[in-house]
Image (cartoon, rainbow, N blue to C red; front, side):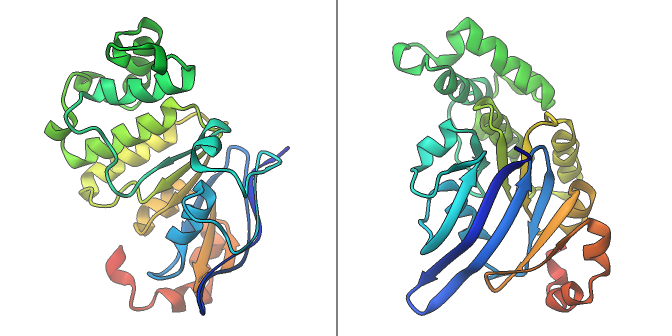
Length: 250
């Protein structure tokens, strides 16, 4: 099984408006793949269908060979689909460690039995601290989320997603709102993630996309315009035409 995640003929319409038009997409196991496209291209709708926030009008979503089109969000997570959100989804008054420990505890199935903080559980605590160290956040473990700079909050979101041990990780604009100096930090962290995880990044920052991705899919008006290596996409005239007037996005 070399395909971690696949969509077949994925469509989504809201009344007369088609926002996803027969999208065939493949994310290889362990791939580093980016999804790009101008505003209104349907990128967020596509991700929301992958994660189960939205149901497609037609078509299939297949995760690791299993049709998950009808499964709810939580069941998809249990089967190895992890995501970060564009909007901060953290418990802001809890510490960094507690936020990550909640995800690890959830995955290990120890959460319901614990009345104490998840991080008080030795196994959970150990794995959470190890994860934070990988992301360069070890010294921030005791800090409350609301006391952290925004760039570090985005890294904590990635740590939480990784705490669920996904096979596929969807990163929805991980560098959005992060100063460019810190976005390089996010790139370094992505480079260090386990190679077997297939990562799909949806990102406006073209510099980050071209440095991170091995493959790039360009979505325009709900359709796949082209897919290829960064080199091929960089030379494609259709892509340049689509992005004329979009330069202000990086």
